[in-house]
Image 1 (cartoon, one colour):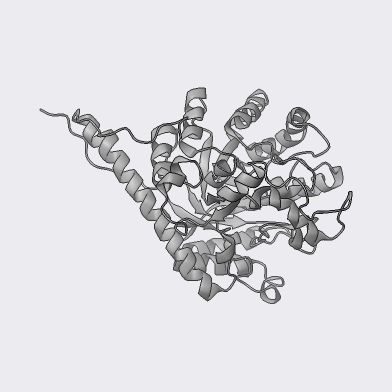
Image 2 (cartoon, helix red, strand yellow):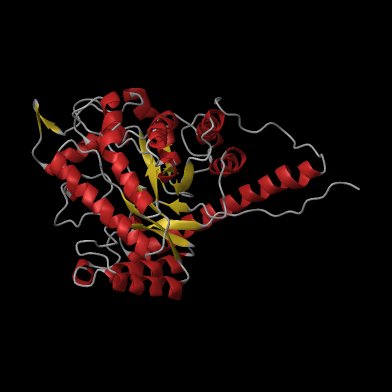
Length: 414
């Protein structure tokens, strides 16, 4: 009898980062009643058709060390941790989770945790620990964030900084039963200096180097990657090759979550400045001094924005040539490559839509709702198509020894 296996595709849960709408709940309502912001975001996510949210935490604007006008994408402190997050607060949020049917995938705090100023670094570490404590009370299994970089030191010296300063955070995560999932954005605009790579966990080879440090300290299971393909495109990489590299090196287990955000490269910008971005005359310096106007410091992001623009999934034209040139994300192959090359339970790995497409970053709920709903629907259907293809080709046809047609996109080749 011919071998038989049923068609059983595995779909990924689709969610949204709450930073997409920073002031869903106005300040005058949320500051005196901070958990209202989380409740209203859960309700909004249900309207969007999301399975979950990535709950954004950040230092409150009144105590943040980086002014909002200096940021490329201002962060959201949907989860307000000025006061301790107590069991009573958690109970209130979890009641909203139950009522809406929208889960919390993880809690995210994106900041430079290797900041060269030790006082500022300690403040950020304390906030990350508070974020972890909130995650535990909310019953989630992970926090998401950056590693960062000590600007006063070389990349090699930052490996030592990671070992002495960041590993204790991973130990704290271990003590709480959490993973720390690192997004790999290089954060070029974090500094008006010439450094482009300001989050040392920016690429697969660096993830492996950091993980090997974690292995020596017994926190390897805590260090994972929340992969975002927009940053791969920014650095001239493609997802399939990244996943193949991890597979080849024996680290295909490292990716535990995904941000669904693309990047559309500006060929003229690349022609003018290359992949290092604008290196001079940006406007973040005044003569030979760093400008003391926070708004000017946002110009440091021209290291990135001069050559590309973030894509909200579904908003960029279908462009096969751009896919092959690694100048836009091929979402279908992205989801296929994950299933073919990564070691993960895809029924539990969240696909988190992160909205940073500037022209569409409207901050009015009624205007943003159809934009996000459309992007989430696009993401879900692309993932379903990839899961269907993978199950059909790699399970159903393979069981019956029926060959798959064609070649498909190949790693390490564009």
